[in-house]
Image (cartoon, rainbow, N blue to C red; front, side, top):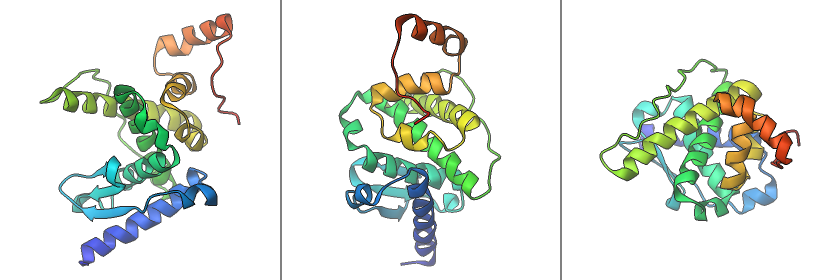
Amino acid sequence: MTNLEQQLKTRVERVRRILLNKFRVSEEELKKFRELKIELGKNSQYIFGEALIRITPAHIEDYFVIGEEVSHYIHRQLNPIIKSEDGLQIGYVNETVGRYGGLVYAKAEEVTSFTKTKNTGLLIGETPDEAWNNFWHEEGYRRAEKMFELHRESLLSVLARMSTKDAIKFMDRAAPLSFYERNILPILDKLFCTKFPSWTK
């Protein structure tokens, strides 16, 4: 193992330890986790089917990037059923939880300043899959940043355990981004007695 690989392993283990606490992972839940694999690579990403975190040398000290990838790992281990749900919407939920976890980890390391994600609303990519991936990253990041702004870490463990359907309904209300979500949804919920997961529990 090279010095750089050891540095990465040490960093990821620290991030994992902190985020397991933030996600409120119990001992029983932890026993079911797949072993996490870590490697250096050209792109920083979590490979969902392999429980593999790949980080570029440039990102080893980037709290937001490593925090996000470790959050993807914890989210998938806590909530394996989510992988069988809607392919487009699951990307949105995954990226929201990942970014949210990255922000929570960075705050634990006393890093709170970050550049907010711009709202372009565009589907841009060389392939449809790439375009959707970029779109859900943008939408998920914006939602996570609002969640963190309003609630700090308090909703992370709740959100990570929800189905895709419940998570989307929950996020629209807990971290509203649009006029519709801020002003119209509360009226409709009251009118139709809409039930959705509470973030107070």
